[in-house]
Length: 168
Image 1: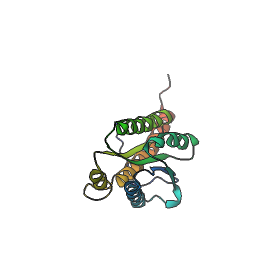
Image 2: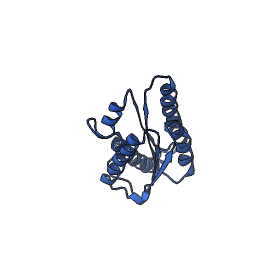
Image 3: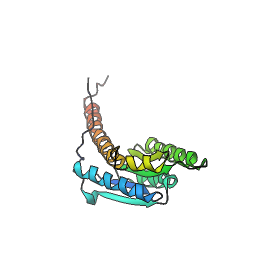
Image 4: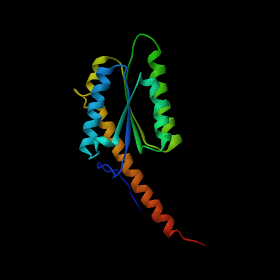
């Protein structure tokens, strides 16, 4: 039996992208700072990180797909903030961002971590961007590093399995 668990150490030669929504920039800027801190803690060189700013959370999936399909990145961290208002706009934006990012990860096999805050109010968003509830940007960076580590481990395992496969 084999067991695999991601490590919080950036695999060598990792290159990642961060797609960050500009809407609610007070929040997303704090998420970005947290993400960079998380990557620093895991040994990912800042030169291995590209930051792409998009207008808002709804635009994150299309750029994430372009980055994932480019072959230049091992993973993408998606940061944004959608705060409920008086209309149903929130539901469409939050749902579109979530399903779009999940679709990119499933279609490309590239880890795409979803850290688009979906909160009822600005206070909840601020709490999740670095005050009371930690920083979800940092959490996302750590999750992405774990996923990159798992991809490396599994690729090595598959290589070993293919070399030792029983042939009839």
